[in-house]
Length: 378
Ligand code: UDP
Image (tube, rainbow, N blue to C red; front, side, top):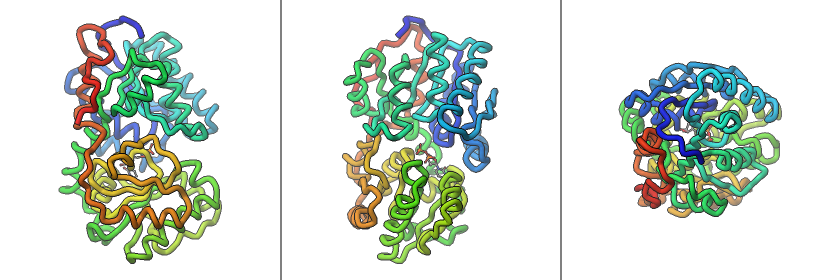
């Protein structure tokens, strides 16, 4: 870690829906404090449903640079982003590059900066599923090891980073997803009309999201997941609402997969509508990282359709249950979680993560690891 002080010129690299949502509080904080920043969008997510709608609704400035990379194999996509981000860094010469999460955009942003000896701040550092078959896990590990500031959400993630020898750069800040959920859940309750539009009663429907490659790219796994959720839903007769990610829709079309009647496919939702469904569903079934966190924050029990999670805190506090993909296990997990009282402590912080990150980045002298209390902020 360098001893350079007070980064005043920031480049923010993002490219996907969850990065836009989790960066929103940080961008807002930069604007409020008049910290100069350049926003670079890689174009990893490009359909308006997963991209523009979030810039509009979260009232974010349009990206200063759009690389327009789009979908491709991991290597080609990451290489194109790396080249594009490097050009921007030559031009802007920032003090620090901020990346968030575990996508190829995160990897490319961090790697381009590290190679030019520009400091890297990784927001949501330290998450580990310990499953190297997930491409996201490779990205997390590599980015944490080349970053200078590890803005980690919890004491659990801090421990993972310490075990990997990174103690000199850890700052436990909480997760900016709490900031975003706090900032928008009340607005969603007031403004969203999604329940009426979909004819749903609060507490009498289930929410489903599934789009991870390891779940939807193989027919047997995808069918097993859908069958399990549908069998559980049939026990109560309540509908399952599935805002379908373009990747999953492509797979359904390619496999000619028949989706069970209990599952209603709807277009991907904007953030306010999705938060409203997350807050009012009886139960959420998901393979998404962000949805595991948000349901925990919003008090909705969650069943995770995976065998591992990089958010084990949600399981430890009783908000989430790891079911895997076998229909019998999904039904069991649904029974176990349905009606569970949401009396758990939220392990991801107090909604001031972005504030802490900006305090650190704009400190008059280079921050020392541990200047934020090592305990998870509640
Ligand atoms: N989300 C949304 N609309 C949807 C589905 C998800 O706004 O139809 C939001 C959700 O609130 C969360 C984020 O998208 O903040 C999760 O994104 P995703 O599941 O794509 O990514 P992951 O969290 O798994 O990386």
